[in-house]
Amino acid sequence: MLNAQAAEYKKPEFTLALTITGVGVDIRLNDISIEFDMFGGHSTMTYDVNPSVIAGVNELQVITYPFFGKTREEGQTKKYHEEAEVKATLYANEQGDSSNKKILTQIHLNPGLSLEKAVSDSVQIEGLGDVRLDDKGQSLTYPAITFNQQVVATRKSLPVQNNYPRWAWQDGQIIEDTPENYDSLLAVYREIYDAYAAKDRQKLIALHDHAADEFTTAYYLDGGRAAGHALMETGEMIDDIDSKLSDFITRKTKLDIYANGRMARIVNAAQYHPFVFLHKTMNIVHTMKFGFYKNQQGEWIMIR
Image 1: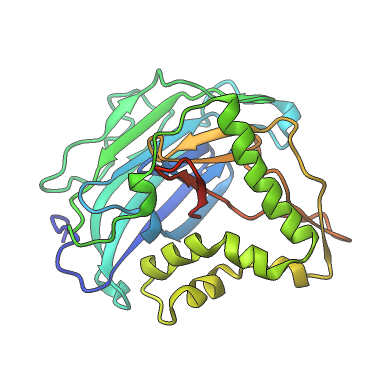
Image 2: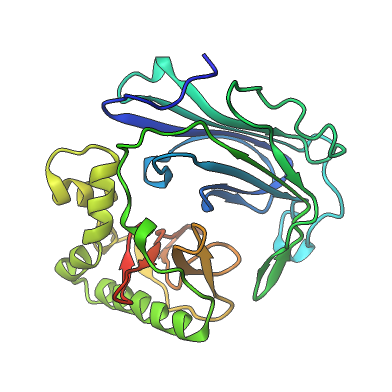
């Protein structure tokens, strides 16, 4: 059933199913990055996206660019691979009933084809407009690297029921890309870093409280805020004896503003925030995702 909207669910559950082949991508829901990959292999994955869905109409966006070589030093390829392809589908279902999924929106993009044919395989959905294409979008630029953004596909969704939760970040300030905002948010990252360095579990829990509240609401968890912390595994890296905290990183990072100006983070081109954990013997980097909004009092609040 393709003409269904997410209406009258008791506990709606939203998933974003992705198949990506031979192309670099930044796939966004309501301008919140769900999947970012610069190297362009082949992957199929499904994300739970309840915290990124909003009541009413949502927007799915597939940003593509010719992928990089096996290393960043090889640089970006000059054109799309002939088999470059992205399928992105936003589903809704009642929690616990994944066999009865309904499509809210879908994009099937072949960026190597002409614009007339690039999205011709996208599913037609009654009551929903066509995919909007742009091959002149602004490049994704970081201090040390630029992703030449070639083809962008955007599509609205069928509406989500109006009683779906309204998130705190939706009522936050519009964030501007200024040195002052970078510095003040970096200070918040430093506070989190120092709490990890001191193994101060209680401080970490307090810093993650608002994010725990959001996840508790988004996933209908019993047990309140504590359940949200359990889902997030707040402070788990304190107990990981095989990993060590990296030095605090500021070089080649930038203030990344997203969610249509309502959220921000500090990351580098690999999407690492200012600190990561490094495995002591294996070449593995463990990075946690942080996202913040700025409330009407001008405070940075962790929400992811």
